[in-house]
Structures are given as structure tokens and as C-alpha cells.
Length: 302
Image 1 (cartoon, rainbow, N blue to C red):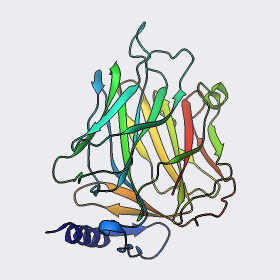
Image 2 (image 1 turned 180 degrees about the vertical axis):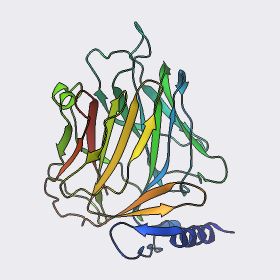
Image 3 (image 1 turned 180 degrees about the horizontal axis):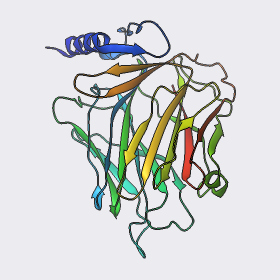
């Protein structure tokens, strides 16, 4: 089977497995005029996992959908930065995967005290591979592995495909909650405004990620505004409970049920290149969010 046949087969499988569409009645056909047959715009989950014991790295399996050659890969690596009194802070310093792709550091935030307390709060960093040179497959034991500067607890790894017919652009950080933000810590709500942004290419979107860390969790949650949320991801650690909630603006969001796997989200952008996108607010409220370390990132993906 050649590469294009493989891609057509994957498309057929996705379309057959689509069971619930959150924003449109049918999954639109992919644009197969892209270079080397790569699908048009797609932001898609490829895996999430947590390592709760004390180790210096965590391996996340490719769980939901395959990464194709030429895809970009966005990785979040997050954990409490101080594992014991007198240690740390320890943070991610490199990301590797099973095919040897290179990952560049993008940005980070400290949703924790200053100085950080033992196993309290969370240090969040993002990394990006601009173009995978080989397949990362759900069926071949493929993986992504961030490594920390020393062992820490509750290492969370999440990853997404960033796919465009013209190749993946590096995500643009539009805004993020400030480091060590005591006002957000004390509140039940996280709110960030994206600011004005002009995508360079059409079929762009904005991605907001809300991240919380609190022993016992933050309870129920809700959001308002024009950002759309299709699902959430909960991680139960050995030191705290964590919530990672994605929201998108300017995208069609879909939940796909993979064979034997939980549902995962793919998002297809609708924003026009060269057109100013006005400032939009993404927010999330939590029933037990007070005195929880939390924050949000908003990224532009074109």
C-alpha cells in the first residue's frame, strides 16, 4: 500500500467511525489536493496520559489517530515542579518520540506559588515539531516522551496533530494567564481575551486550553462566550487532581469514536487568512475552583 492509499484508508476509517458531530450534521470531505496527499487543516488529539510515580520522564502512547509525514505535532508537558522539600523546581527540557523527530520549545507558564510549594500547582510547557518525517501510528507502538530535569510526580503529557495543506505553522501564543497569579488562584473563574490576530492562511482557528491543579479537584465547570468546548480531560494524580479543558474559536469541532479507544476531538478551522480576528474571551468557571492553581493559554493556529 502506497502513502496515498494509506491516507485514503485512514479517511475512510474516520468517516465510518464518526458517531457524534458537535457542530454540523456531517463530517466534511478532506481536501486531497494537498502536497503529498496530506489532509487539509486539522487539529486533532493523538493522546493524553499521566505518570503518577516519581520519575524523570513520561511516555505517552499514540492513542487516537495516526500522525502522517509532514504533520506538525503540538505537545504539552506539565507537572508540579517541586517533588519534595528542598528539591527543584524541575521542569521539562527535551521532548523525543519513537521516530526521532525534533521538538522546539514554544512557551511555558507557572501556575504555582512563588517559590513553588511541594507538589502544589503545576508548571506547564509546550513544544512543537514542525514536520514529522515519518508515521507515528496507533497500531505500531509509537510514542512521545518529554523528559524533566529531575524526577517529579504527576507528569501529564497531551499531544495534538497540527495539519495544513501548506505544512504546519508554529502555533502563535495570543495570551496566557500570568505566572504565579494569586488573583486567578483565589477565584472560581479563569478568563482570558485573545486580542486581535490576523491569520496568515485560511482555515485557521484559535485554541484555548484551561488547566487546573488541586487536591480533590475543582468540581463542576462551565464556560460562556464564543469559544466552543466539546469535551474535557481529567487526570487523577498521586498528589493532586488535574483538569485540561480545550475550547476552540473559528472551528468545526467533532468527537470521533476510535476502535476500542475513548472518543477524541478533531477541529477544522474556518477563519480566513489575512482577515483580522477580533479579540474574543475564553472563560471557565469551577464550582470548587477557589484556591486552586489554574490558568489558560490561547493559541492561534493557521
